[in-house]
Length: 243
Image (cartoon, rainbow, N blue to C red; front, side):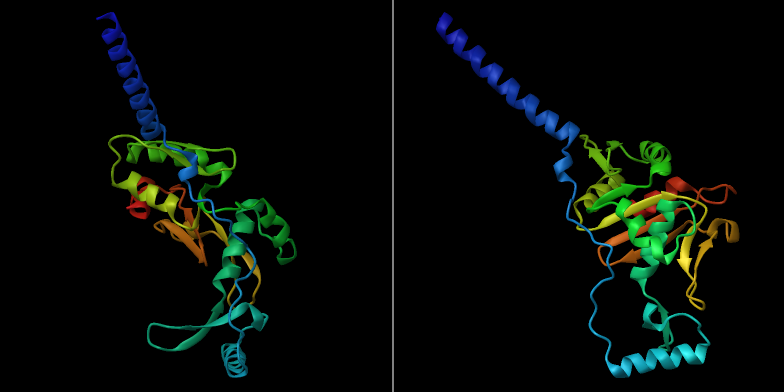
């Protein structure tokens, strides 16, 4: 009888240990779940522009009176089918990220050095000065628990009752994309006409602008309005992004 009781107790202990381990895995999540593919900031290797395309770029630049180096441009098609030139998205992304890291207007000559401070793999990365506010907003709109690790990446600690925003974040964490988030009233862009890097105070120019967006290959960046003018809802902005 005592032997049977001992066996039953042993089985119960084993089941309890297994349940505890499974529960802990579900409750706390795992940082390994975060996508961690390496990213590069070199300009994407595009197909070589043929002579006809290059002539077209040169002609459009001359017609529009643009003053910048033609190598920063690519052909784009407007909604009405008209072909124009625009600064390559990869260059705009690099400039915006470099300016975010420098917290000032970057020079083209220092961009490569500044980007050495940039996140090196996919996931959700939060700019340093925005981290406390970002976590505060997440606490109001999600059910899961979150933290930001030493590298600046968001870590999701799952719960039993994740809502749609938690699920959206979980999907983003598993994507092969680097998502960068900042909260700022300004960003940095390359002027389409002059080719010079300039500060772009988007919130001051239009307080209703929810965020500025940049994308390049497997990288996306959201510069969220600080709401200094009380014209936007930061919680709704993040809900729309994560939904």
